[in-house]
Amino acid sequence: MEQELRARAAHLVGIREKAEAEMAIMGIDATFIDRLVETFYGRVQAHPRLGPVFDGQLAGRWPDHMEKMKRFWSSVAFKNGAYGGKPVQAHLGVKGMAADLFPEWLALFSQTLADIAPSEQAKDWFMATAERIAKSLTLSLFYNPALDDPARKTV
Image 1 (spheres, rainbow, N blue to C red):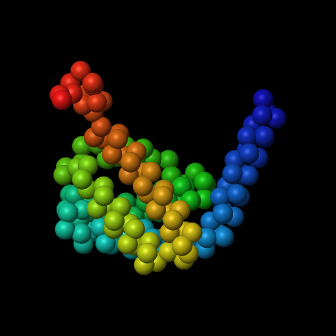
Image 2: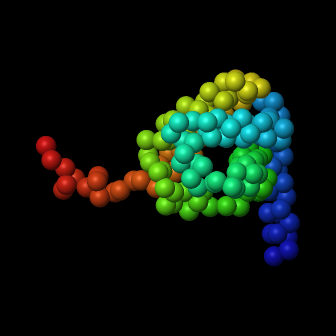
Image 3: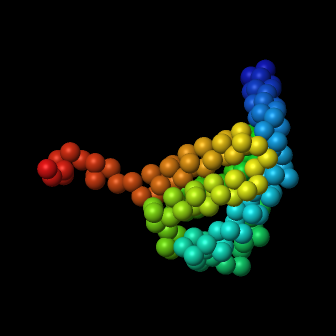
């Protein structure tokens, strides 16, 4: 059992080291993660549709949210386990949350990356990751399998 635990710990270290090396090649470090989160969420707050939804949920708690998002993106990029939250549960029941906000969120994220990403490779990696996250959240929050029921389809 002890040998298995050591092997697992070594495996996890290897995953983190590989992720850190891949991010370094793209010019990504902790400073960039901070800048990405600060810039993006500053733009979210000013956005005419996204701002009110986020602020309705986070009013008075923006600094905590920013730190949580920094841990989230650090965990995603560097595979370091810095984030341990549950994104789907965090978004359930948010007043004003709608599936059609995700394309706007992605467009704003894309523009932020275009403005600040240190490389095209970094921009592509973060955008692909954000698209997967948006798709996952959209499906988790809004997908209704009953709507895909062939028996309910009309020609």
